[in-house]
Length: 199
Image 1 (cartoon, helix red, strand yellow):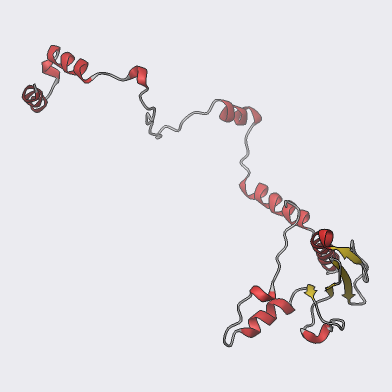
Image 2 (image 1 turned 45 degrees about the vertical axis):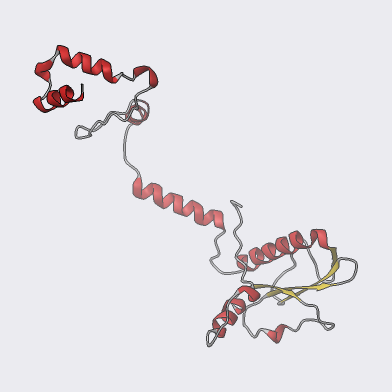
């Protein structure tokens, strides 16, 4: 949306062939929020992906009857966030939306704890301010309004007629040939010979 942009590193879709497997682990490990799907009988262990990041881990455990148990593992310095909470049981109809909203809220909360953090709207306002400062042309309002509502072409501008002839303005070829009979002096000799030959 216009206020939220999310990038997911999906481990099963990142290629890891040959010796570049560490690149895959670097992408996954450097994320501050991890979403884990676990079908194991025991709880997910944080040390499976060794990283200094991964401040928030949202683990989804499928249960019977299309229900899912949510486990939220967060570092001590991260405050509470929602809408999901540790131990929540949710239906499969609302699972994707709630997990996504929880991940976005967790990421926003984690980023807000960083020193010198700027929200997206602050960065956008700064970019607009810089653009205005660098590209503003001093002018009077009357001149601006005149240029908007009654623009004048520059002196060196070329004017090209790009209008297509309509059916009402189309001219018959015979009418042109008859008109050329009346004005032979305006026609080139080659064109006149071609016309005579074509009769």
